[in-house]
Amino acid sequence: DAKTTQPNSMESNEEEPVHLPCNHSTISGTDYIHWYRQLPSQGPEYVIHGLTSNVNNRMASLAIAEDRKSSTLILHRATLRDAAVYYCILGNAGKSTFGDGTTLTVKP
Amino acid sequence: DAGVIQSPRHEVTEMGQEVTLRCKPISGHDYLFWYRQTMMRGLELLIYFNNNVPIDDSGMPEDRFSAKMPNASFSTLKIQPSEPRDSAVYFCASSHTSGSGKREQFFGPGTRLTVL
Image (cartoon, each protein chain N blue to C red):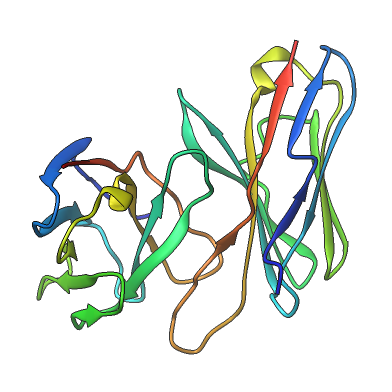
């Protein structure tokens, strides 16, 4: 399975944008890039996904490098409720492997 | 829809006892996943089913673990006999096939298992 690499932790100030990076240099041509987040004491929840083009939804934006070997999850205005572990995972079938993720701390 | 339902939410048992965790996926979903989460190992995929058929059980730690999906609306994860190192939060998730490549998995609230 293709693996992803994310920083262990990041900090942000409230109301500021946050860019969470993910490297996936061994991504295959059919792998979609998915982002999930896990709030404290909850199960992971879907944030966004993409294949080649940048994507936007109500929660976040996903910027995908042209060679697809990296991607960035963008939270446009971080709130305290965005403090969570963010996972970048790859998959094109049922199976997706979660790595260690990035723990995002948002400071008021 | 009520989302993915797991029961029990908390389970405390003694070493050697049998433990059964239950999951009801979202209606209409054709994939079901069982995960285990610990501080040491993070979130691990144990097994997943497609249309009630086990597809990949390579994450099941050992023969003490077994999972079944007798129908589209119910799955169990059984540990027999249980050991203290099985203490973890067990998540069930479900998803449906989508032509857009969206494999959004909906996770249940988890079962926190403590084996004494």
